[in-house]
Length: 269
Image 1: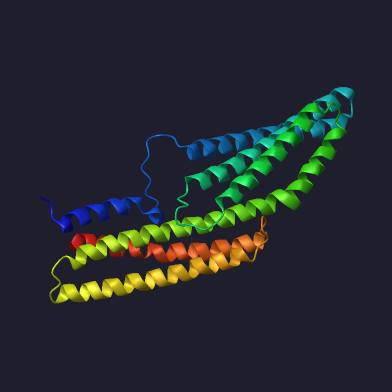
Image 2: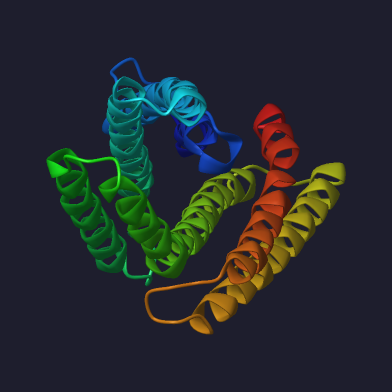
């Protein structure tokens, strides 16, 4: 019959591979997040193609100013503007699938707000794309382009910033949870083992270092949450997102320090 220490070692090894901050992901099946990433890549490639066609058609129209060149410019511009809507939509869906892929169990942050923002943005883009598809003259398209730009600048961008800020913190909270779970398993495995002499010193220094990592990581995480609390209910500026992201990344950087410590303990058990 396996001893409790052997069972704990096996659990620790399993958690090492699951520990999110080490980015070990073993998945054969294509996930919704993978599909969203593939769609975004496809839409971006398509965007570049339509952009190139638009530039060529616009140049031809400005040079020749004929009915044929104007018609070609209209079609190219229409396709280009419609593809911009597609690209924004695919990006929003990618961000939303990233949110769905995270573990929100240990988070107090509002996942429903993330879903609400994604729904509102994709709905607007769908309506805008419908307006583009119904346009019949070149003169209509600059107006629709200006309308989209204004919406992105005054609404979409800052709401996506808010979403990204929330996700940065949720990722950090999840990583901290994994860290604490793995630490508890390894700590129990070590205390169940006799700790004479050097082993006692190793354990004391290991727990001290782990405690330092936890304290610093939690401080950065709390700092990120405090920064998030100062943002508007549904929006965040680029500067606010940058500050929150920095604090969250510093927390993850602290947690990464634990990887060699965990590996060292497992080898010693």
